[in-house]
Each structure stands twice: as C-alpha cells, then as structure tokens.
Image (tube, rainbow, N blue to C red):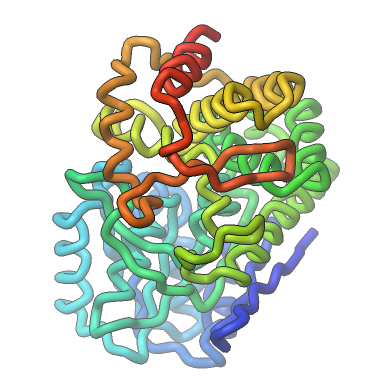
Length: 385
C-alpha cells in the first residue's frame, strides 16, 4: 500500500520523489536521510502546536534515530500566521541554532507550515535543503508539490515568495484520520479543481470516490484496507497530475499560455484568494474558498459561452459532495472584485482568468474580454445555492 511519484524537470536536474502510503512517519528519519544522499546534520523541524502534538514527537524521534540533530520551530495555526512576523521569528530560530547550508528544514503540517518553512529555507543563507511532510489532504496533493513557497501580505495572498523545490515529499495518509471534516472538504475541493482541468481520467475517479466515501466518515475508515488502498491510489493520481504540470513549467512562465501552462492550476483561485483576503484569512479554509472559486469560474465560463450548462451542474454537484461550504452571501462582491487588481496572475497589469471549455479543457481568458455584469451575475448565482 505504497506508491512513489517522481517529478523531473525539463531544464534543471533537481528532481525528487513523492512517497505516498500508510504508517510512514515512524520511518521518516531514514526517508529524510535517503533524500539527502545519506547525509544527516541538523534538522529544523517546523510545525504548529496542534500537528506537533499529534505527530511531532514521532517524527523527531525518527529523525534523531537516523542521526539528525533536531530542533523544533513552532508557528501559529492558520493563514494569518503566514506572515513577515512569523518568517522573521522562524529565521531567528534557525540562526540561534546555527543552521548551516549543509543542514535541512523539515516541514511537518499543512500548506501554511509548508509555504512558510519553504520560504524560510529559500532565503536563509540564500538557500538550505528542504523536506515536506504534509499532514492535510490539500497540502498532500497541492502545496507540497512544485516548489512554490511564500507568505501573505496586506496586498494579497502569496505575493511574496520564491520557487524552492524540496528534496523529497512524504505523504502518510494516516494523518488524515485526525483531520477535521472542514479540512477534508477543503482538500477535496482542490482535488476537484485538479480533476476539472486535467480531464475525465482524473475527474471521474475523484467524483466516484466522493460518491462512495463521505469525508465525515474518514476518521473511522483509515484502518479499512480497501478504503486506504483507494485513497492512496487517488492521491497518487492527483499528485502525478500536479507533478506533470510543474515539471513542464517549473516557474510558471508568463509566456506559456497553452493547456500545459502551470497557470491552469490557478483555476478557481482568483475568486478564492479574493475571498480569503476580504475575510482576513479567518473565515474560509483555502480549499473552501477554492470550492466557491470552482463554481464561480464554471458559471463565468457558461455565461461567456464557453462551457455547457450540464458540465456546470456536474461541477456543482461534485463540489457539494465534498461537503458544506460556509455561506458568503453576506459579502459585498464589489469589494471582492476590487482585490483582483492584486492577483499574482496579473500579466502586463492584466488579469488572466482560468476558465473551462469542458472538463479537461482549461483556457486562459483575458479579463478585458469579461463584462463586469458577467462577474456580478456569476457571483450572485453561486451565493444562491
């Protein structure tokens, strides 16, 4: 019940493996050592109090048994802690413990931990080694793979960051048994997004899995071999898709606008990031915001004559299978749309929408060709149901 997905870049030699399985944390030290070619040294274990309380001691002990000298850096839990203040604190801990260029940073947690720890690793001493151990569904299939790291600012989400590829990623599906239902819903919204832009070969298995297994039942099913095997297989497919896109467009080239551009991974994210910003990163989980972003982009695609209404209904149905999203009908769409000007996908001061011409047929669409009335109408539609 173990799979490996490899990611190999076209223009750089720095490929790595993503290990997916169950009961992997107890062997995380040997894995980390293998990712570093047999080297040990110091390991800065970055996590948050909740995740560390569940899995930190196990990972720390495994790293120590493998020969690493481990020190722990705990950060706050939530998007609002992906900040300059937290970055400065983390870099200070690295310095106090004399982390060197031959040592490694290990991120144990969700996307916030991974993004913050990865960015800290990228700027400390101009770059130290980095390993990812994601513990949320969303970070397993998305943020831990591809090397995007960063922090949020008053201007918007992820506008300050760097590309810093990890030396390896370790996914242990057993951590999902302690994940709150909202986090599972958030992760599956990201999975639906990837299926929507990939095609039926990924979308259909994702939709079928959600029809068979409800996220609220996951905690009691991790010990079921059939369930776990299906989950590992689905995560492997999701990660393989992300890895393929990233390998072909590692740094999201502004000039690459075809169906293999890394930009297509931003499907649903323009509205999602805006929703997160206007609610101060406290109301919606990232994946929940993506769930609304998927529905919004689908409605907008329909209104622009790109997407068949039946496929819009299908996307809505599968998002609903993932779980209930917090209501957003009380938010002012004009304020939300105003934040689009800070979106990181701007090219030559022009926003680029990732829309759909069909499942598996993403298209990059200029905002100049989108009537404001279509934006408002699409937003009203997704807040009605």
